[in-house]
Image 1: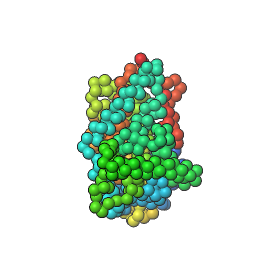
Image 2 (image 1 turned 90 degrees about the vertical axis):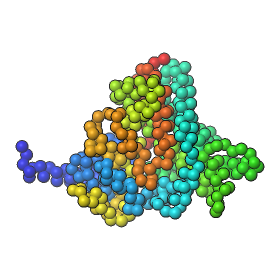
Image 3 (image 1 turned 120 degrees about the vertical axis):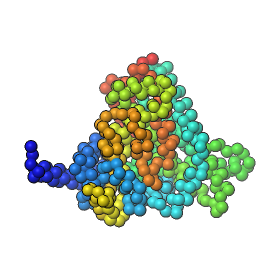
Image 4 (image 1 turned 180 degrees about the vertical axis):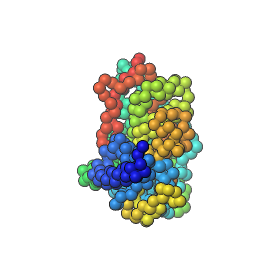
Length: 432
């Protein structure tokens, strides 16, 4: 058996390796953050090692947290771990200063209040109806064409865009243009940490188109309202109605940035989550068959359990990032108590947290019986995804008709293909 000295020497050696890995990761975050978001296997070994020997790890100008309670602690403390230094300037240059880039300021409270005020109890059902209709019709069209489908280009991405058009009231000039705008702007705000000028230029051009489109819709809805006409019952129109009855009122630009910021975070995030969950089911034939049986039985709650457990193995974000604004101690009073210094970029291991064995027993096993409230696919704290209840319908809803089909499989020689961090194509076949 190894001596205590040998064990401790090994821990120190691993700790040294962790520090170098973390510094290398910081460089990759700065230079090629999008590649990290497309491939969690690049960071999974680092977080796995952290959970075992140093759950909170700090190195010069960077830190990472890996365990479930510490991840939640960081995400809940927006005063110390801020989003604004990372995202706000890019939002201001594209969609406007949307709540997702704000800390808990008066503007945040006012505008998140407006967003919540125009959401009704029936909206989840409405979004589910849009999703199910689109998914069913698209899968049936694929069946009629012989049983082949691009599960991203023909299913997950256009369905998420249909929700943007029909529920949020922002169809753009056409679906292709709208989806291009959403992807380009999202890429600039959330992925271009290296400040690639080509990404910024493309996003700026797309933002001009998106903002002009939204301004035109807002102006038309205000004209209709003044003329006593009936407005569509969508998110944007409800904001226009609220504007007309609120004292003091708010500017059209507030409506534009609320709608623009929300829809930019809707299309590719939901599409990515659905595509990656589907991919994880396809590499687990037994779980895929169990999920198919749930879909055939129209047991939507059980089917969703399979989808979100699958997503745990390749979530839309393997980690979130925050900027530490003041020296802050994490996990105070525990053996892992650690102080993160002001100025550090903090990698918040959301996927790692969902492999914490104290919260997810048998973390490497696929188990659809896990408590749904433990998943943190949609974040935590004040920046928990605003559309999480909508996404809970969109992600499994767009997959259900496809998973029902017998013999679902990857087309020969193909897998999930990416455009940077975004699933862009996934050729599948099924029996008809």
